[in-house]
Image 1 (cartoon, rainbow, N blue to C red):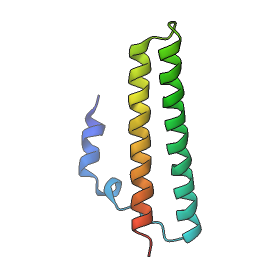
Image 2 (cartoon, one colour):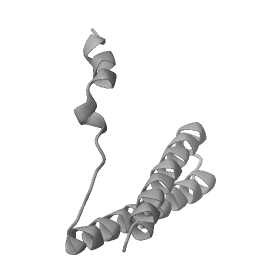
Image 3 (tube, helix red, strand yellow):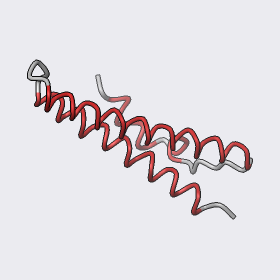
Image 4 (cartoon, helix red, strand yellow):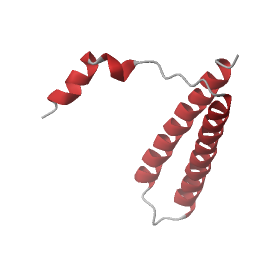
Length: 88
């Protein structure tokens, strides 16, 4: 069932470098990932405050969602930094 997933490692076309040469596309990509960072941080903060105040929220689920949103924010931040460092 998962044989196709293991075969992806052998296929070189999935691991080619992503190269964007247009300056406008790079700027839009930085803006989009910047918005993802801001939205995920804001949503994680709102969720943590709401879970702390309201007892109806499940605190375990709020913690897991907050951690996942933090991971999303870190990944998008690393994409923004990588694009800006590669800028020439």
